[in-house]
Length: 242
Image (cartoon, rainbow, N blue to C red; front, side):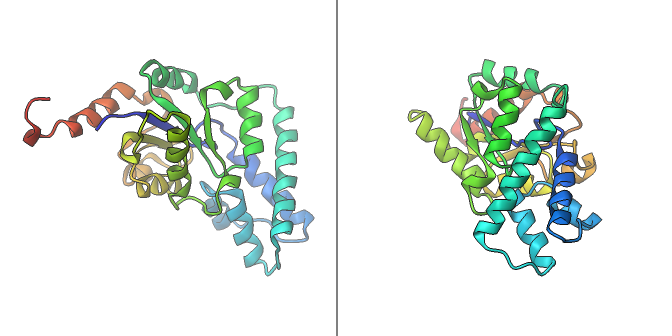
């Protein structure tokens, strides 16, 4: 087994914007004459898609919702997010991101992004950060009907990478996911991938119980050592010389 692709989560891995999302969700709930999120609801929303979060929050508050109503709320949030990002003099990207992308590309590994965020929000940040060219495959929250911890987003990313690169013949077991939440780690593992947990959002010890590797910062991730593990799994004793 060889490592062929590295799949990044977005919020909490590429950009430190979870607080912005939580704030905007509260603002929209208040505008809809609904109670803002409780502490436990805020915690539960981390790593999940905006659609899934709004569905749960509205249901708990007894609000009847149609698909059109839900789409209106998501569109409103995307516009508010764009305004918040425009206010920032510098994007809160996580340290070590550029170096990690360089490591991935220098090893001829493919890159993809799998997130529950709306595509409009993702593309806005990638364009401003000048990272668009590095992520030819993006699976956003509006591409699927489920949310992490379901594996659908990661499986769709594998499918799209194979469509983009027909000779790749990529399997989930040849992918490495980079995640910051238990829901994200579970989604990637259910898809058949190994996972690096980044302790940006949850404590190190919590992610360590779930992920294959856990690091405090992106700068701590040694991709070369991870690749060696994939190669070792390919070279089983029964296979003879590697």
